[in-house]
Amino acid sequence: MPRSVWTGSITFGLVAVPVKLYPATETHSGPVLHQVHREDGSRVRLKRFCEAEDQEVEYGEIAKGWDAPDGGVVVLTDEDLATLPVPSKKIIDVVAFVPAEQIDPLRWDSPYYVGLGDKAPAKPYMLLREALRDSGQVAVTKVTMRSRESLAVLRVMDDLLVLQTMRWPDEIRSAEGLAPEEDTTLRPQELAMAKSLMETLSEGFDLDAEKDAYAVALEELLDAKAHGATPAPVPMAEGGAEVIDLMAALRSSVAAAKAQRGEAVPEEAAEPVEATGGSPAPKASKRAPAKTPARTTPAGTTARSATAKASTAKTATAKTASTKAAVEKDTRAKKSTAKKAAAKKAAPAARRTAPRRAS
Image (cartoon, rainbow, N blue to C red; front, side):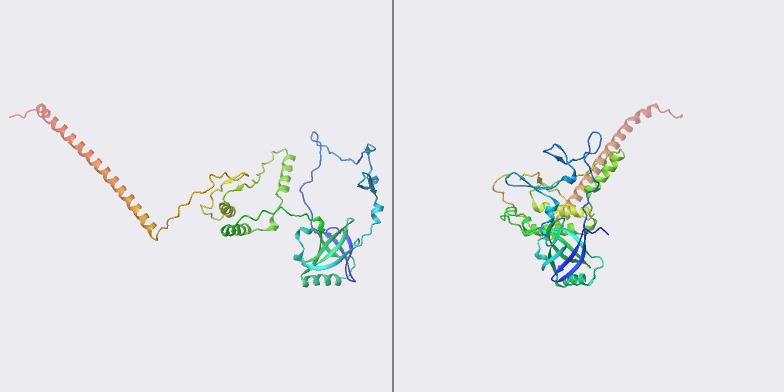
């Protein structure tokens, strides 16, 4: 269990609930890196230095200061700050109960688990918890932590109360002028394809399985250098480019998401999308050429065409075979004629040289 960071009471009306606050989250940044001298790796320290006296100042001599409009400095000590009246210094003061959806998520800040105080009765805690659960509302409160008063919300998480600090209204910056101009028309096909991409990317997604890739890579880099090894190159994610064909980009995105999971991808969907590196593609002309309407093929035409092509190929093959046979037959005939002529020419010479029989 983490150490408590705040001790006090929740008050709503005349009911007080002694509680303790525990940090609900922790920020991880991987291995801690220090400032060191590049030449020898020795630590570089920061010193508290007084500009007027040109010397280092001890921590106990440091106070807080404010730059006055006249150019002077107003110095405040810890004793001065302790005299400021802070009504919510040791209490979580409930000021109202509102629906959770009424609070803009931009207002959320740091969350804390609310545990029961030492030797405090459990009934008031459970009463507030179940009242919040049954009403479906959250409690808006004020609380002072680290000498700063904040708005906060009490809500229910399972069987525990959670306090989440909020930003004050004037801490939320205006978003005026940041939204895109509303002069672009979205086609129904584009919206449907975007929803299809959303569904594809969400299939099998596990938020709890996500990891900090930077922290993992940093640990591997430090381990490699500590052992004198050459760090393995880390693949970098490519930045997006300005897409010319939005529908093609959406189709390719769906195909890429399916391919990553090992699913079959249609061949036409896997084609790369033409894009630019940040500037729009040049326009060939102001008026696009008219498109030729696609011809509709009657049912059965494709099958008859395929049959005709097969028949043509078969006829061509038969002609080729017939021609080859005729050439071979003619060659054999010529050889036979030449052989007979040679035999006829050699016959008289054989008769002249043959011995005569005795009479």
